[in-house]
Length: 326
Length: 184
Image (cartoon, rainbow over all chains, first blue to last red; front, side, top):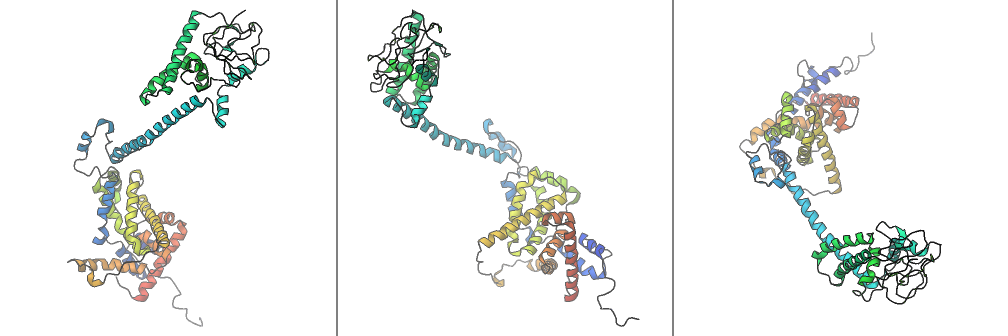
């Protein structure tokens, strides 16, 4: 016989975990007496809504409609779609509101952003071109860029076929084929030069007398013609080729290659690369590496395989000048 | 709980039916408000409104059954509640002057509403006396109708811990009810 009675809490518990799980699940049958008040309290928590708990429905519905989800509940949402132009017709359904508004806003933003940017870019390009034409040169780091723009030209000047400082070379065609000799001038050559001259003058006249942005389409067309005639789309090379023809348009501007080693632009020439002689150069301006004048070399040394480097003439080159061919 | 019609109601809501969405809202919002009033009484209305905004935005992409729907909704509510609590901590605000009970507008049905609400309010007040985690677990299990796994996912705890917390909460409730002689 025990010495003392067990404490009041000892013994079998009035409920176990299964009873607790049952109460949590909402079961009310067979609930132990000890848990019945708890079950009643939980049942009160599950009770139906009171009016105060439904006050926010209007706000939720407003959000539902605002996000474009409430289209189907409206009386005639599809009738509005017929009034929308085909180009901007919204897709039916819940997302139509978004697609109706946002693309237009994006387009307007894009237009508003791009228009000043395009105008600024065009203006900046025009200023740069004018500055180049007036000064004839770049300053600072742009000078290096200008030199890099014509590496083949520099190479053709720096070395002749014998490794000597070069005489003007002939770039025979648009493919950049180099020749050291050329046949006598032909009528087609003169015709090509005339075309080139006219195109150059037409193109660069714009910079002398700008006629507004509307003229840019013509400018672009002329530029295309020039690049085809010259055989390169490098702006500096094109300008060097055109310099003899447009020098009267920009009297203050030096002829290309002044005081620097630059190649002699030649517009024709179908010489024999192996005969080591310079053929016709078309009278294009050239300048030797250390020439001090602003003149041009009108011809190379016939048959010598070397150019008259360092002997720049002081006169103005004649674009139609001809060299001799042995 | 909506029951078998839930899938159809959800599809209709996602298709833009306001009536279907209203049914879903009326089914869940009372439970949501009660949960929030126990967890954070002063922010309950604001958090519930933010929760529904979030739910409506995500409604077109939601997939799942009714349990998943409720779990998603209460998870969203809990996150919004935590955001609200953090916000109030960073930007504490002074409440306006308290409105005296005599200034509260009364309606003809106010007394009846109060009577209807009394049992629920008493039960909520009783649950508010539980430790926070136990009260949250009991509410999510009982009011939200979620199972142990779903509650564990919402609270970021293990199912075993959730089960233990629920049992302890019920035992605590039983003790409170028996000791205080509370009748509902």
